[in-house]
Image 1 (tube, rainbow, N blue to C red):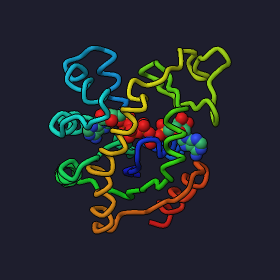
Image 2 (cartoon, rainbow, N blue to C red):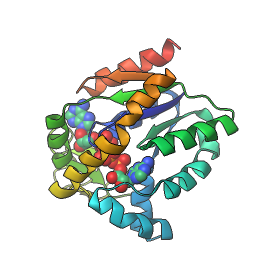
Image 3 (cartoon, rainbow, N blue to C red):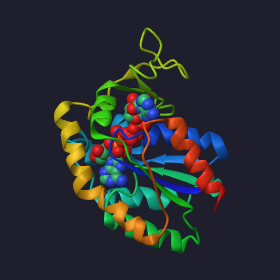
Image 4 (cartoon, protein in one colour):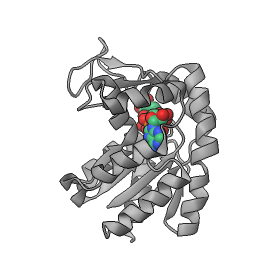
Length: 216
Ligand code: AP5
């Protein structure tokens, strides 16, 4: 399957994407994870992206499109992919459309995870993430805690709070989402591939996505 997960910061895109990869072997492509990996490794991309990310702003479209153009052509994408955090602007969506046409690929579904703002704020302040770039398992001190000494249950690496998890950056990320990313809901609604899912339960969201894909 080829799926896009839309949703505000903290809506659960990463959590749902990881569950869907277990379903049919599609690969999760998270632009946020790719960028955090680049910042940690100190690459040119990381140096360019770091300031935008820490302020809660979007990284310029050109940088993201360069990453995605090559990422979508890697062999592990042949089984399908779940885009988590991309596209995030109308120009990114237009560029993705052209790229998929060039690669003769069709999207199966755009799932919009619609979660109330108060739930999102609570989730973002309580989220923790595995610091190992090859793992990046997502935890939550309330709903899915790491081990009692703060280690990842999958790989044993320290579990940390993200650099963009300050109150100021969270507020900015939500504003940026409303201004730049929310218009994609209408964009994909017009394209006819959108499924809106209003649920705070990951089980329910995964099950709606699976049944929508099966019905295609
Ligand atoms: P990115 O990493 O994509 O961050 P985001 O969109 O802000 O999304 P999050 O990762 O914060 O949340 P999520 O929806 O994945 O939720 P999660 O599953 O973790 O991007 C970071 C930055 O990179 C951006 O600000 C930007 O600067 C840059 N960037 C990335 N892509 C870009 C692009 N395309 N263009 C330009 N710039 C880009 O869940 C959140 C928490 O809730 C977790 O603790 C989880 O355990 C918990 N939780 C989830 N579901 C449930 C549930 N059902 N019940 C209880 N708890 C739950």
